[in-house]
Image (cartoon, rainbow, N blue to C red; front, side, top):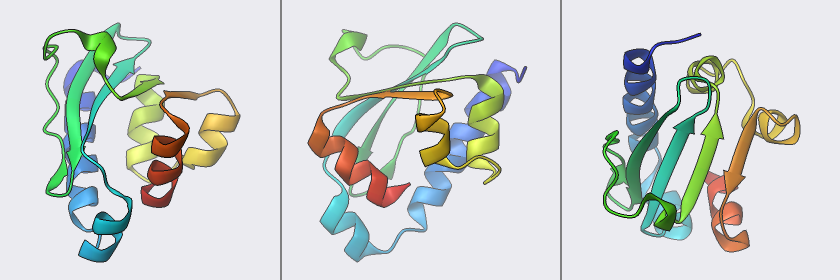
Length: 115
């Protein structure tokens, strides 16, 4: 099991990877959304935003009502690390039940283009 600090580092790395996306992809697929990422085995939730300028930063303090996040991810700590390091395919993780995404259909379609 990864630590909370390792998960923070992984989320920062995910934000850096998002920064590498070209501007055309961002313009076409990114809509400003709040995101919560619940690390199920650690019992901690990180909160952030996805927007044209980037992803994150993530914080473990809710911005108010955490239930209001537009996109809610639930993932195990080791799976988060593996996903960010390219060792776990997002599609397989979702269909295999290792990652749960709670979002509108439109948000899901946009996110799949970015992941």
